[in-house]
Image 1 (cartoon, rainbow, N blue to C red):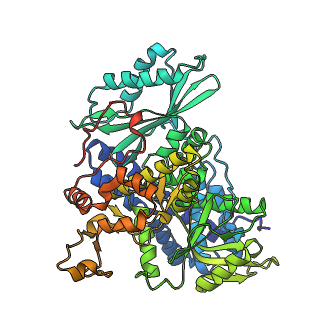
Image 2: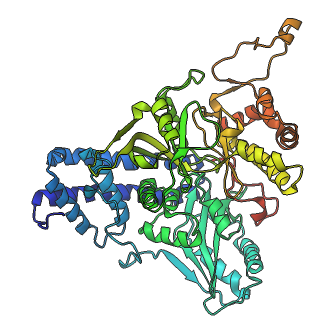
Image 3: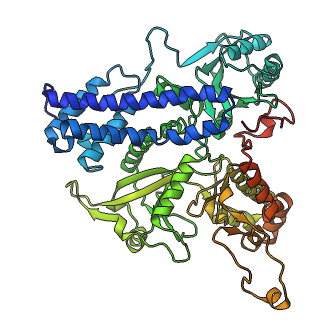
Length: 606
């Protein structure tokens, strides 16, 4: 039990300093999100991507600054546990009427666990569960912008007028190319979606007040309501070829929103006074997407980690299956395990990496950080990174525990550190990703039934085409995946192919793509060995075929759709485009959603 006295001035001063540190962080976070609007209006694409990368570091920088202040002013690490108990209670008091209490709790956890060095053993001193409710939280100060706005067309015939008003009220500084034209096209799409529905008295369009910015796009997000039906809605706004704004596409339904907010895409920048209200609104649009992933998509990855930890603890309490070695081919760098009933995988770097992989633990960590900062183009799975993660020893299969002890003994500890009589396996460093079906296993299953089940043949063809598309999307974002074997890609629930093995990725512009030299004599032509010199960054695309296309059916499909991936000229042309400062559009939606048929004339560079 916590002591009930709250009058210790030292504890209150520490709590105030902690809250000041969090408030400073969120001011920086919000200011950067607000500047995203100006960067979008001025078509500063490079600046937008740079800001997205740099914002990721804001949190850790502010945590370190807060720790330094607490040590210098209060010798925080020397304070007794009784003082820290008081600090937590005072901090709870400071969160009353705060607009971001859930984020403030996470900041408190981040700071105190580093000061107390008891990351997972003393949950009394951190917020394992939320102490302050965010339900119905709103900014009620005079002049505050509401979380969302509601518009009432009244009938299908008045959709154009309502949409015209809606987009004009966004107050974007640059003009639309032809807003009336685009609104008419959008209204037609809406009428088609509403054709089977009866318009009820509550017919309305609700949209979140702030636009969502990412790379070259701004996205209006909301929903159409009539009766008990709610239809999720998102409208991408882009710069056309003349530099003026166009409504580029119309996205309807939960699946389209899932693609937009995918865990394989870069985080949005969106200005939010009350982030929990945005998350609540978005979760109603996408009930299958857990709030942890929504917070991540909004750039609040630390809050996403907090919610994931709470979800995982809850799941462990209400399940009994065992952690196991994840299905698929074992990697040379990473050890991967999962809990069958939980939709994530856990990955740790092996203590000793196979000699065939010329890479160190530190370099692997750097690769994961590169992915975190880079535009993932919808093709690289996001990761949650944790230190000192404790799992119940009883939940480990004997095979998995043996694997950990054989390949990562320096990273695990088995003990009863919290004194509850139950042993725990404590892993020092861990990555967690959404579980996907390994592409090699998916193709094997399809091939086994392709001759008797046409739907399996179709699924195989779609996956192979998606595999090539995934590589091309990565190329468009200046990423060379390195190891392109099928086992390093996974298939999502929606059928997208996503890359998830990062230990060999490089920037495309750092690679040297070469044609295989012609042999100079018969001896070289007949040689089974590589007879030409190869530099450390040399890549020979025409040699990909023997490793990737051993099965005739796979080869036939691949060559019909993606033969260019085996040509060095394809890769070099994209290097030149990137070096010239161009940014290709990698849309989070299909061409069928475009409002302008055949639209390719978009602004491509600053």
